Image 1 (tube, rainbow, N blue to C red):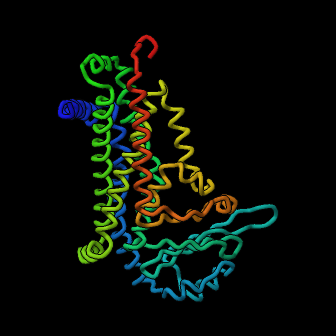
Image 2 (cartoon, rainbow, N blue to C red):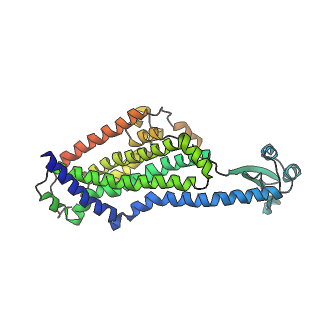
Image 3 (cartoon, one colour):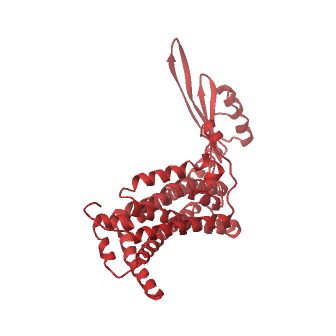
Length: 358
């Protein structure tokens, strides 16, 4: 009997994977998954060119890093030029307010590594913006931030919505699910085959994207730098990100499989879950643990950068919580997934088809 069930599961997986990988309505899943690869590739092409540009400017307008750091807000343009010399780019204009003219503009300097823009208003430096070129350490933080705030929360989340909700709901809309139900196959076997087909599809798509993102991000660095990074902590980091990506597909996939069985319109429940995952940083410690994103972030090897533009009130509302240990996080995701699939099996067993209402 077990051999028959396994054969049926593999048959369902084969059919469902063809639908998933080649479905026209699933093209947007690929766009979500591989958009960061394109952005990292563009960045890796642009960053060396920008470095060459700044190094050339620094040769013609040499400014020391120490002198650049000594300039503070409130300095006058004359004081800045006296200390640093002429900027490589200067823009000063004026506008009239009331009965007097106000000057505004900017001065730009570089030491070859940092591009410094000093914003001027009314004869004073009012803001100093320092744009640093990426090095390997900053690139790791950038990747962690993008991975946790875009890839996990949006790309994989909505990718699993598109794949797993349609495993049952899509066939109800296409009026083709009854072909499965007319076969001598247990509902639990059908559900298992569909789940693993969706899981395999999403894991392949999103782990491929994660690996390509790393390739695109590291492309800008010298081979020796990449080799040293991979030999130290880099290899473990990449495998950790691949594992977190796969676990995200495991957890979110089970959730949206159940939603596809329960709801005719999955938009509202998906939006509620997205809201719950999004407000996780502001929840008390006990409630944080009732969300998938808490465990996934706990497994991420590098902490994401804090948003410097976040309003102070929001920063105060963030509830600091120690991340879960890897063993606890993995166990939590797998147990939650198993529990959801058990619920899904009961729902599948009672599933009835009425195309006039679905």
